[in-house]
Image (cartoon, rainbow, N blue to C red; front, side, top):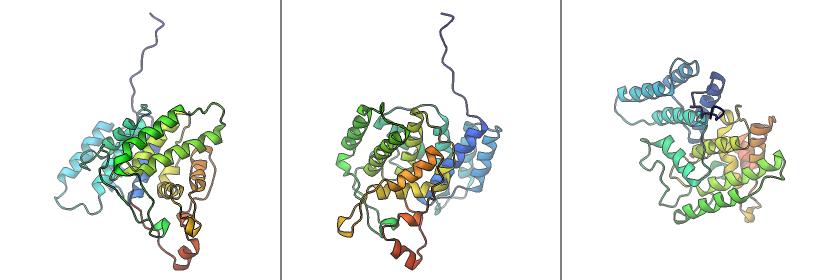
Length: 284
């Protein structure tokens, strides 16, 4: 019995890991056009330096918004602050369940108290006019089929064998799986941030350490690449492509230095350059 190993209680990660988690979490707010407050940045720094715990950070952010004058939060800064903290906490936890339940859990953890439907499957159909598609939308899953779509994707992925795949082929297959999950768009809001957290935690199962700045600096590119992976218009000669996701994951996983420019994803580059459009911050 003396040789039986005991389980180790998880503690907060070291400062290097925390720095990565915070930067990733804050960078992911860009997919919804959000910017965390200076107070959140100060709180994150204190947490990284080991001066306060996650519990203390949570208390400080909660009290900060209780003290703020009542009114409409037009910039949704409260959401940006609270979701950044919650993403950091989730990435710090060495836990994961490969199931649709994990997606619902992540969404609920991120948006509890911010969205009434946190952790709940949407019950209405949606579309979004995308800048990268010149105002067109991709087709998301019908609300009535979301659960079936998730079960199908997870079951197919669970049954897939990676045994004979090299690292590059493994990532290419994971990209297709993640792209399909995102296209389902299970929630009313917060899909891209939820999928990003799920993706990072799933990659850990394969032994990949993604502690770099790819998500931090290119989260909007990640979303636009997911759009291009799920949009096709044969009449206009536009086809769904994983090309841009491959570039993103090349930087994330293999340390490549691919240039990730959102304008390169626009379905009509000539149109984009001619009018010198300013790329808006798309909603997730």
